[in-house]
Amino acid sequence: MAKIVKTVIKEIYCDRLNRDVSLIEDRVYPAEFMPDAGVAFHAQARACAFGIECNRFGYACKWSGLNPNYDPFEIE
Image 1 (tube, helix red, strand yellow):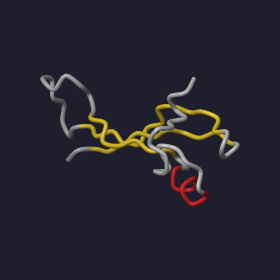
Image 2: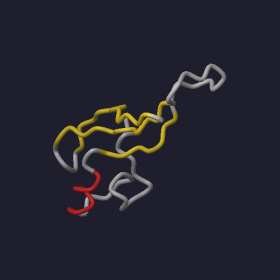
Image 3: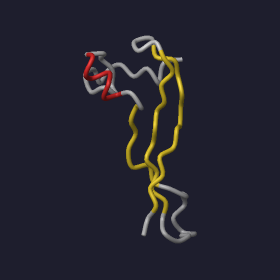
């Protein structure tokens, strides 16, 4: 059976929430080693740790689902 692991891939300071936030990725690892696969895991999904809270408060960004054109994790 495959194993799903939540991994923090990036942390930033969010100006809208005035706090540190994390971009979390769900990684799926195969049940057994597959040498021909080429990659150790498959990235299933990404989400901001505070995306749901931002949506409730109306803070618009890609991860809150309110503005797909603004991604605070890409700005640097």
